[in-house]
Length: 323
Image 1 (cartoon, rainbow, N blue to C red):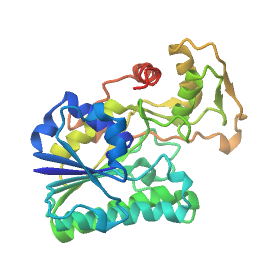
Image 2: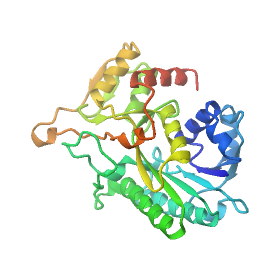
Image 3: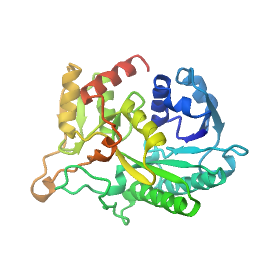
Image 4: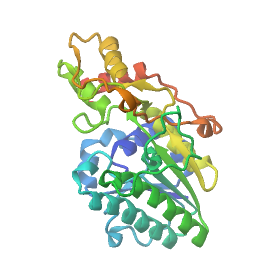
């Protein structure tokens, strides 16, 4: 058994490597684990500690270049987690969509050539589109979708298209696939200077700045610890049901305002929480929300072991000590 991982040097990959150092189920199951990277030498130099004790090889390549993928090897399992959700917004919408869809198709073609038995796709809760106001948690059975005529939907529509490609390829070529629809996370590898509210708030605390909320703070989100994420993905890889979709995240909702206040409280910050947006009125006051139903994951005995307060304190500790 051999495992091939894309996106292994990003947020997901670093979490997986740390988890595999403490739980040997994946390293013991696979004879060899190979990570795809555009710059493996840089990663091995900067993150040598994450590789200690693990039988992990690197292959220099890019999901957008099929010719750069490994040849002459056989991979029984593939985990495709290479879509860049942090820097993706810097791409124009067409580039972002094609990176997701074409990249997934290239990996599925690669799976066919390698007689792969199981393909794990990390997708996104963005495939559901806007969460209905009367739905507290989005179940996997909900068939909403992003507005295909909205340019901002390139990520969500791309992920939904990638999921459909998995269905088509699995039926045509007879391999298993699992889709992990990922929501929002917190952890030591989360970028602090992009579009993630909790990352921006953590940066504010680290820099002893006021915590700034650009909107009215009423939007609802939930946050899964990076350590729980790695356990869930590892479990899906080994035990998840064929052709199944799982939401990945926390089902404990919190408003952006309360998230900022929680950071302020648990860190004993002397900074202030400032809300720049004005409260909406009328129909516009209905909350934007993005909360998964994780009942299906619980069937695999998965849970969120770390509270949000614990996750915040642990993340700040690691950030202050430079990981």
